[in-house]
Length: 288
Image (tube, rainbow, N blue to C red; front, side, top):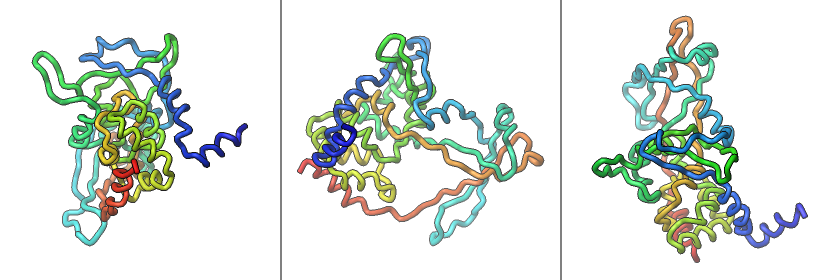
């Protein structure tokens, strides 16, 4: 029995897994939105959905008190555009200061650029437009509630929060959709032709590996657009989009010299973009 299902999937393709994805989507917590926190339903009991989610709940919010340029004349023939020293004000974070040592490690969560978030909005059916007496969709407050009464919620990130915060901090818009994300969002995406393309892509292991190739660095928007997707379910996207991963940095200061400030050095690196024409053709013609 244990060997039968993998053998069938190998013979006929990964589309046989859709039944499991349908069941998973049916048990996903439900997205709730409102103009303010007071209008949202009470937070249901639950726990972080995974290790990355646990980081979000345990992370401290620090203010960058200073940013200074280290490389004044970047060279075009060297990797990197600039290096900066960032000072993090940790006065209000005693737990972080207790673990503060010279040459230690601090993990920092990156955020998406506002323009990247704005580019995703039409696909998600939301808008920044503000109507008289109302607020833009990104400023709405969100939370998740369980499907069944009394059930716990697997929390992808801390709620309640604004939709802007969820898309900016917790969704990695720079990474291509994962196979799991493709399967779950396929059930409700529009139009139907896009669902067919995604189904064929999921059944083509070589094409799927190409889409996931980190050297190509395909983004969420690039993949969905190439597949002809016009609308994605917002709740499913927030739950299944790849999570932002914290980036580790070596502490470049000492608590003896800077007892309440943690310094790190950050480089903005660059590399030649890999040609994406081939993978785009795979996605566009996935219905063949």
